[in-house]
Each structure stands twice: as structure tokens, then as C-alpha cells.
Image (cartoon, rainbow, N blue to C red; front, side, top):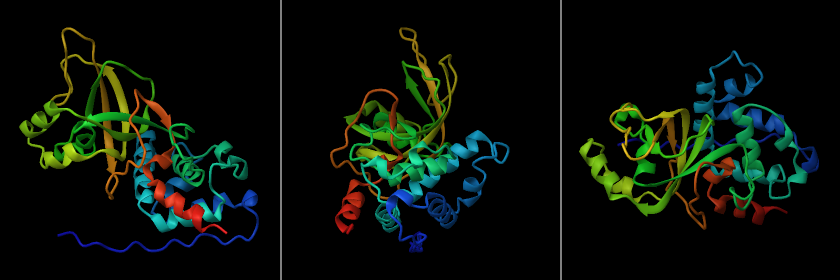
Length: 266
């Protein structure tokens, strides 16, 4: 049995000034440091410090870890004057690393992360395929999504597991030896993030998850570095959507966290 260790509290830099003058850099650096991401934050302007794929993976992992830190998110939201009034915060227009962009999206979380797109992309997949994609390839997880569309985008993708259940996925997962298929079939809502690293035409490659059809052109979307939310997926009015869509990183956070933060703001 894995021991559960209480996460330490993150102390945000104290600033009595109005939210318009909120010191984003100091707060972001403190949170990144406490979540073991300071190295990537500090190297945000140095393209030689890490590879692009490493940076994408670190950003996805950071976003998922922070999404589970309700106290930190409530404090960030209250302290920075977060909310849908984007005029109170200028970080959205400030270029920076993926981790900085995650924090900007979390600080300015819209009520609908699809209606007010942020700094990443999202994709809806059917059950159980979405949850299977959240299993690392080394553990037998599904690392290829077979699609009829293509994209030039590469980078982190938030994964939403839709309402539709594909029994063929349950059968294939069982046949491939993937464990806990009942669990994967039941997962619905925002599950986490994975990194899209390649898209190419299907030509009998990418076994065992890549398909090829004679009657229809398929593309293999190749993912790596999945990061699953530790808590139960939330829906709370969330809905599936068609295709790869711009989305706010805050989609990973249960809206209850932000409602509590707004309710507690003086």
C-alpha cells in the first residue's frame, strides 16, 4: 500500500498592494520552487537549458500536480485577484515558459475553459481510450490515437473522457493485457494531460495501438509523458467537444476550488 504524505503548504509572497500590481513573477517562482519546478521556471528564457519535449512533459506534470493543491490554488486566486475580469491581471500578455503559462491560466480561470481559451489545447476521446492514454507506455498504456484528421500542433494536450463508451476499446485493452479495464471504462471528465509529439499517416506502423484502414486514411497521433490527475475526474457541467481545441490549463481544476476562492474573497 502506498503511503499518503500530506503536501506542505505553499506560502505566497505577501503583498498589500492592489491586484493590479500583483507581483506575478515572485509568486510564480515561489510556487514553481515548492513544486520542484524552479529549474524549468528559471530557464524559461534559455532554449538550450532543456529540450522542447522535456519542457512540455515538465509543464504537463506541473499543471496536474498543482491542480490537486486546492489550498494553494485558492490562495493564488484570492491573492492575485483572479477571476474572469482579465483587466486585473497582465500576465496573459506576458511571454514565458509553459509553467508560467499554466500559472497565468490558473490565476485567470474562466468559468468555461473552452469559451475563454488559454495557453494549451484539449482533446475529447471516448471511454475507455482516454483513460488508457493516461497509462505510461512502459506500463502497457496506449500511446497512439488513431484519427481521420491531422494537426501541426505539438505539445501538451488536456484529455477529456467523453460520455460515449466504446466496447471495442474495452475488448482491445483486455486483449493487450491492460489491467483494470473496468476502471478505465468508468473514467469520464477531465483526466489529465499528455504530450503530443508526432502525427503521421498510418502505414502499418506504431504497433500495437496504431491502426491502418484500407477504406479510410488514418493518422497516428503519438503521445508520451501522460500525467493523470490524482483526484477523481470532475465534470460539473463540463462537456465534450469535437477536434483539437484551444483550452485553458484551468480545465484541470475542479470549479469548486474557484467558487470557494471567490466566496472567501473580502
